Length: 444
Picture 1 (cartoon, rainbow, N blue to C red):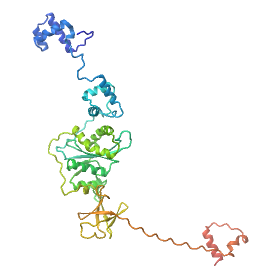
Picture 2: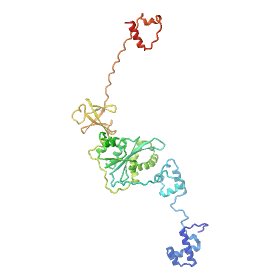
Picture 3: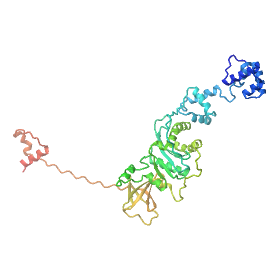
Picture 4: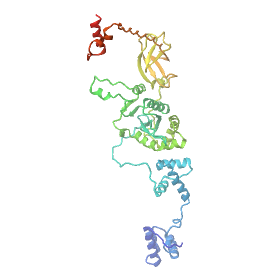
């Protein structure tokens, strides 16, 4: 082993000093073995190596060779080139590592990828705020005890600045995403879909944790506690959750529902890249992909609960969720079974109820896009009725009154030739008043 410059660590320098003393006879082989914690045979071997090669004998023979599993310069350049593309520039290092394995067949550890990108001057786009100490709320013990729900607007599709809102739910005990659904903005329909998909995938949760949006609770809720005269009715979503016996808990701050807030940060970093890789650019295609993506996400980020028994409940067999997650409003029908809703008229069809519904009957209108062609049903005494669009006949236009014929002045009327006889007068009254004055003066 020939080298002009040999770098030894502090430990290697100590070993070299002891071996040199053993060679010179200042200490015995047994004393050198005891000092270095090795056998006598190892000391004898080291003495021979140092005599032949000097200090280089203490350097491991593989230390100057690249590891057999090390990445070549070409592979490193490919990784750096991929990271600098527009598609991957917004990926954090962990997400980029999984995409390299899935789409490019490059398997690499996170630490190796971190060193390659850091040496190339590439920083992770995932910024981290300064740590602020705060008391963390413990997770619930069972899955299904608490479901955190929220929505976030974001430009999910690369190349477009238009923002859409993804509605989602995450279990507090396991961090499992139960549902994701995209809409144009945060809306009641989006939250209906979140709870329906959650029930279909897992079951009915015991409670739901949400912010104070008017979709969840009436703005008069806090006022009604102070003033009993103020009534706070349940919202449409509140009525649906009450039918499912789900307790709705209002969060006082975004930090209180930190699990779903952190979920949005992760999805805003990952989903735009996932959409771009699959060529997804519209809401319908995104929702179809999100149904599968929640299982991919849960396999990577979900944790085991303290109690493995799930608290999610199955809905009763008699319950039809189409009629639970719908808008309910009261209307009164007329003698012909017709009612007005959203500036349109509908007629109640005959159903299982004996006879037609009497006039001035108060019915509940159920509105849901999944309820048939019109998306509207009528409920009366727990009976459901179909409705059809009713176009009232046009009213006959009333005739306009014929204008009265104007009274023509006679040929010898003073007004026709009076200006030639009398001097011109300055009138400040209106023309109608002038005519009335002339009529009083000359015609009566």
